[in-house]
Length: 153
Image 1 (cartoon, rainbow, N blue to C red):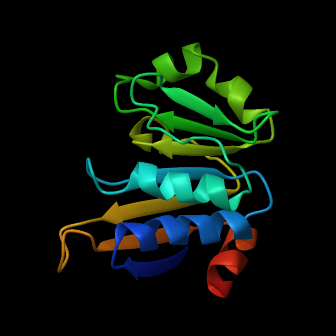
Image 2: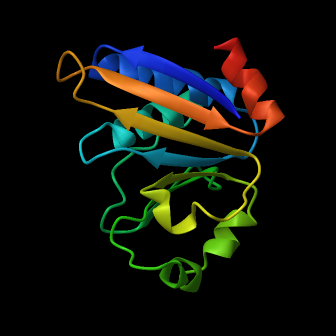
């Protein structure tokens, strides 16, 4: 498994790194976004969506569970925090989202961590470093195509 660590020193740098990664990814991808409340998952997502060339307003899907970006949709952004078990996710048609050939950003992905998705990228955002704005972004993947992109960053 490839693991890469990035330190950002501000919210803007976290957004910019998400944007840079969004520009580099040109294929459908399952992205697991992990981190505490306020760690920057949605901020990273805003940058990623912008990097994919979309100007949609990105908001946290906490209450809607899923937001879609692009027309036709190119990214589905999930917040699974409020769901209690995987059945809820699959009952809402998660497999339909998987079959559309889009990138999926999954915040709080614990319900689906055991599922095998390809290609997949796990991103953890860690705060509480030297300053409140600083983040450590930990990227992990087993996928060769994704690993090549991460190695070029």
